Image 1: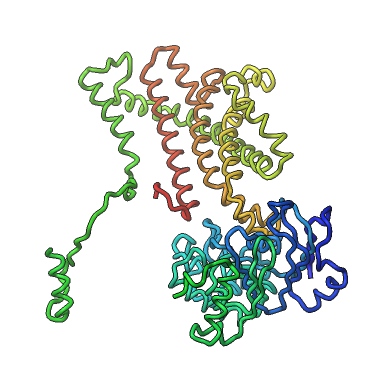
Image 2: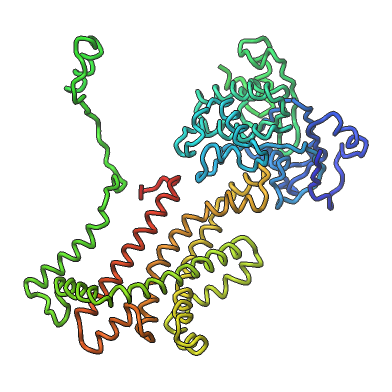
Length: 264
Length: 287
């Protein structure tokens, strides 16, 4: 467990930041966030977020744009050096991030992109295996620009999984893909997560995507956790399952969407 | 119309109507905004046109040979100078100077650009002096360099180096600073070391800028060469031309110019060739 402490200076403690909770959390959680604040005052982006993710648990973080969900993900990824804040974050040693853009280095081959930062002596073999897992065997030598958007995002998935992460952070990874590709990618991600069992935090604004993939859905509103819903396994995989529509309506209401007007 | 008919027929009875040797290719053609496909040796067209213009002007008497020698005179002069070995000798010494100056200039420019691009301290120390050097013409430094280093090869190579490193530095530095911050974030999330970050992200990302600088540098090296060889030298193409000026031999002067021109064009072509190979991952108008 590697904990990075987000500038513990100033700002009063938030509820949940008690030492007792802290000592217990790492033993049961892959991720533990306590009293996370990013940005201060009326314009604060995160205003005291508490979140635990169990090992192997798939959590979807829902929220309207500007609610702070990307800020929370970036805080977990350790990418917010220059953002003022406070709180305690504990994440596993091996964390992988998938961004909304595939973020492949254009000057490196597909294989080179997957092995980026790997120090194992058999990095190439591992990367080939990961590429085969995402259905891109044989494309190792291609340049990123020769791939379609969906293929590029699959390379990004391979790059994150080849590191065998204990925590996978995904920031709207399918947001830039077309609807058909997105559905295929949902299936792929579900299979990959089932095979590798990382804890997952998926940031999305798509309620259906959240229900389809997550064990638990957290709705963020104005920088606070507003709603938490468990997703029963039988609901996630079947749209016609009992309770699916109810959960969907419930979440949309939590997101401030007028369900009566938008229902179909 | 005919295309539509053809398509329907093959669709209905594909086996009775085998595909013709030249399958029909009817398609709507939009206006192509890029420059089109690359053609080999197309780069020769401009220089050849220039040569043709010169030949025609000389042959028709439009161009007085006292102002500019005829192309054939220049070719004949080249033949004579090659026969008595003077051209090769001077060319070799000139090429050696330019090559050495270019080599040191590239190393110095690239190293300074890396130091200045990757650390704030490096930038604070290096960028200012380089900008000052950039503002001083190379010619203005020569008297000082002669005082310090005499008139031997060191001074000549150093003058070329000083002219060469500036464009390498400027372009490489700009490209380094232009690397997308998203890739820096990526490097952090995949746990790249600082050395790995430089090798896998910074250097390849800055390579297009480096090559642009190299193209300026290569032609710059020949330009600086002319300056040092004509001012204080007893060998080299520039000296050969300077000597010809004393004796009023226009043909040798023009030959020297032609040699410089050919060298510049050739070296630029070589750099562009290497650039295309090294940057084959890029998808640009250049193709």
